[in-house]
View 1: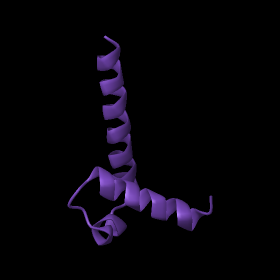
View 2: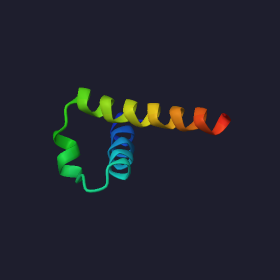
View 3: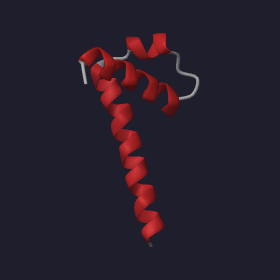
Length: 54
């Protein structure tokens, strides 16, 4: 996937994860902030999966 399409998908994904965050706000986030948001959501999904297994 070309980088510009990957970024567009990532922006939309973050907007879905964080209702109320505008695309303008997301564009101003640093790369570290974006990675933190995605890592938090991934960890949250992993924790929920472990709870369901028990």
